[in-house]
Image (cartoon, rainbow, N blue to C red; front, side, top):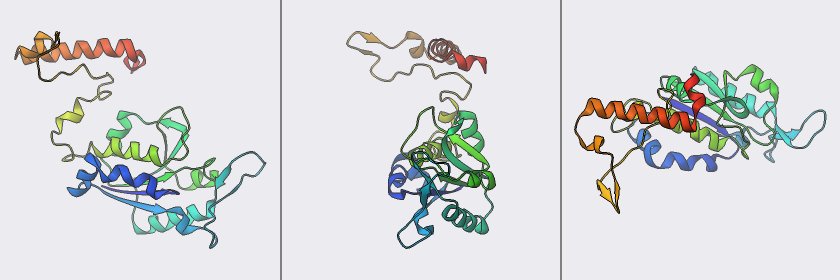
Length: 225
């Protein structure tokens, strides 16, 4: 997979890709990630990429010309399966979407900033708009990193145990059940006996029941799916 990320603040977004699973995925050759500084496409030598919005109102808007130059140049080099705009006024990222995107070859991500981008960019280029929650960040960089983490970890060969991702929360519209490790007893707190029994069919049943209980308590809305 190749991911191109267009950003106003490349240094802000690079760090998550230099550590842990995201770094190992790149080292293994499972994914390539490239960062493109929008200011390289500024309309003047002062690095101008934003302007006041028509009709008045507080906040600056990313201009159409720099983004058009950047996206058009990238699109001339390859075909993208999706061109994604990270913005709070969009569909919320979920596990199903991450699963779908993990099977793609080329993704292009545009991160919003200030009050967002000129709507004409969204109309012309964007094939998918994505939010990570009902709140507003200073920019779309951290949201893009979250999206990439959710997607990249699902690429076959990225995780040491590929079955691990299949048992994550939301894969079956349930929250994950409780997990335990050694020691079996600590300060009077014991691991459930069933997990020590070696009876794996019954362990699976216990985990499913616990997942249902946790989901009903914390996220009952998931059960409607």
